[in-house]
Image 1 (cartoon, rainbow, N blue to C red):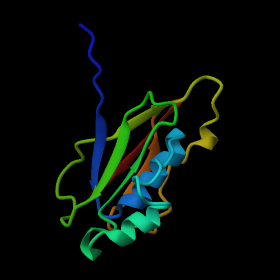
Image 2 (image 1 turned 90 degrees about the vertical axis):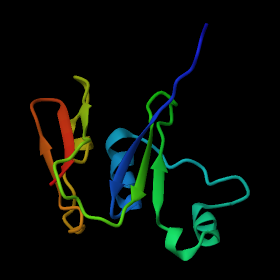
Image 3 (image 1 turned 120 degrees about the vertical axis):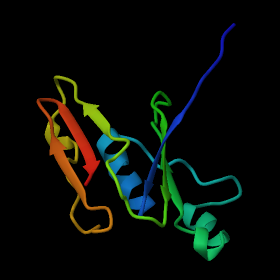
Image 4 (image 1 turned 180 degrees about the vertical axis):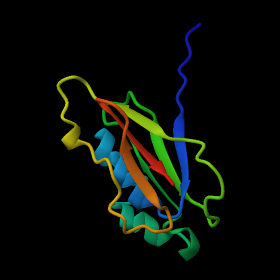
Length: 127
């Protein structure tokens, strides 16, 4: 018997689109097309109630192999140690300079810190 299992990785944060776009750049992911019936994501956002307009953002692996990343806004700040981080392993021909390793510092609510752990591994974590 054959079965297909798919999963997504979900992040809780204060600014979903900002964090999702970081991972798009770091992993080569893309923003999926807007929901059916909408020409653009902005049209879809405008159709939502005001309190839900920027509540989430997602990105996907264009090859369809990697998991979908879903980033959702939560009202509470982080109170304890992170429970999730992604380690990105670069191939021997990849340049670490093509992968963003740090947040630009403009998002104080996230207090994100980028760091590199050994050759070819990039980790983004939130302090």
